[in-house]
Image 1 (tube, rainbow, N blue to C red):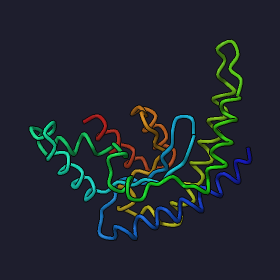
Image 2 (cartoon, rainbow, N blue to C red):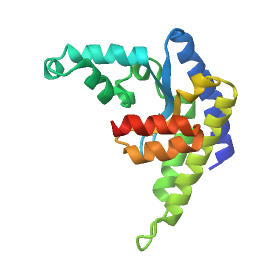
Image 3 (cartoon, one colour):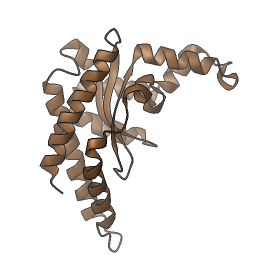
Image 4 (cartoon, rainbow, N blue to C red):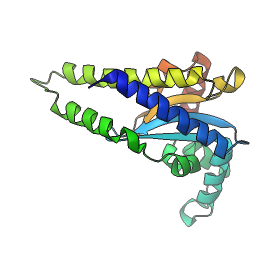
Length: 192
């Protein structure tokens, strides 16, 4: 796998996708921009979350009979870090088709990585290379100012998210690409 090519392609397509999201919702106050994938790296998508989008989805849930008894604030806390529920995920978070060949290669190489005698070191080393490429691409996008500057940036969590991802791995990756106060905000939200 050419991880530099993967990083470069993530940068190009991520930069365009995140700029498009901002253009589509120019008045939104964002709190998350991320790449979204499966645990097997079967695809790569862009996603984002904003407080305005969170309000929309919480109001929609509140109209459902099952959630109608819940307070709006409780629904917002529960939905805030669920990227699949963000209107921006559905609206703009489509799979980045031009990356699919690289994602297929990563997924296959990951599947072919041997795990012998319960030794996961080669597998973990491969995942680490994928994560490093994603981290570098997000860092390059961040340097373009797409995620905000100064106080705005400190209020936006940049991340690599996955379906069925535990909070620990969300926080661990966030530490790699965000200022400390941003990571602390994420931890406080997840603890709440």
